[in-house]
Image 1 (cartoon, rainbow, N blue to C red):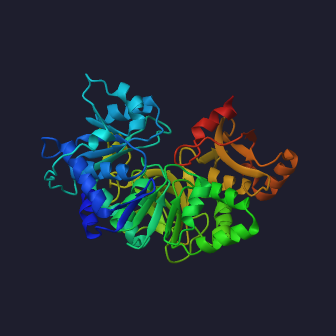
Image 2: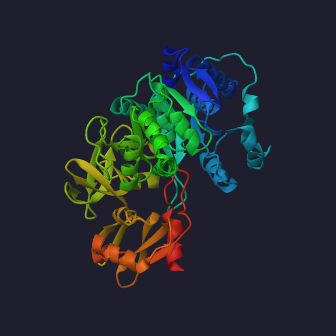
Image 3: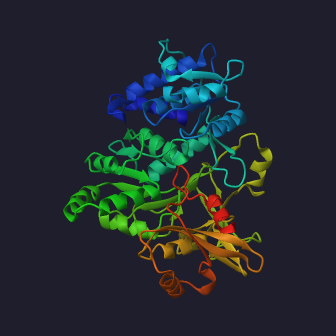
Length: 495
């Protein structure tokens, strides 16, 4: 499918595909640049034969063209997070045995020590990729070829390389274009990191496969994002909950007339989506008041792409991630292996979008699937009236206390409703008597009376769900996708 993106670009030719650094690039231009890069990567070879090509390039036209070039030349694309420290970069390069590393000029000083002359890694700068060359005949590829390796966050172990084939990518892209009704008149903006499936597939690949235009921003700035969102031609917006949280805070500081003017423009947008982390219902409700949009929340992960989504047309239920997408089968399985319908259980997924393997980790791959080849997500959910509600990571967000299974996400939703609390995160703290007790890390808007707060909690939650330990922070630790890194919070409760 990834090479089909390249071929499909020919149908749109002079239409704008990418707006990067204030410059508009047509589909024909990015197709030509990708072919040029592919020619240089191939050299005297006819096919890269699934060689791993790593690249550290900021979001923009060169990111897209480098990625396309790797795909059409027969290589496996390994995008590297532009904020990775050297140890994380070295881990990815070693694990994939990348033969070529392509870097934007600003990353060359960081990468040169990791690619010494005596090593098997060739470091190429973007400037070298612009050297003149003749277009070379491209290899004929099958959909079964490996296309990309993305790395998991590694919350419990070292990150694993998630391998997607061109067929996996095709299934993901085709499914989302159909479900979310992408079309060639759309324009979107990419403000997401491009070493995750959310930005790569949901935003960039879907927009370019549909013949739409993708506007890149190098970094998040609330004022700049809102300026772009107010443009009439922009129709689709996708972001993580943290971004919506920041946009809400920015809008709430404007005058009422300014907010109403912006809302009038935002209401006209076709689609707004939230994902990659649980969307607090309070944020969803505030965004609706400020923009006129009920955000479409969906569920996915690196290994499966998107699997569950609220409907494009139809009810979008706050706190729920929706129903299985076309071609995706979903089931809930309890701890004792029983398939549930009305009770909570682990989400298991099957379908053509599910990843191929963990890179060179056959045992980890085998353990992540059931004998009948359902992928075990490690996320716990409940099904209510056909809609799935995520209760959290089985190992992180499900707290087992005194025989109860408690959803950390449910408690977080309640705590955020207290008017003096800006944000919070709930964890399970090991306890000899109860197994685990509930702890809450809280970010305050203003100082508050703890007695009054605890009395309020007693009216909102049963006793066994009320946090017994509190920590107050200036901000919660988060990863690049805005997810709270709870493994960094737990030690605060153990000290």
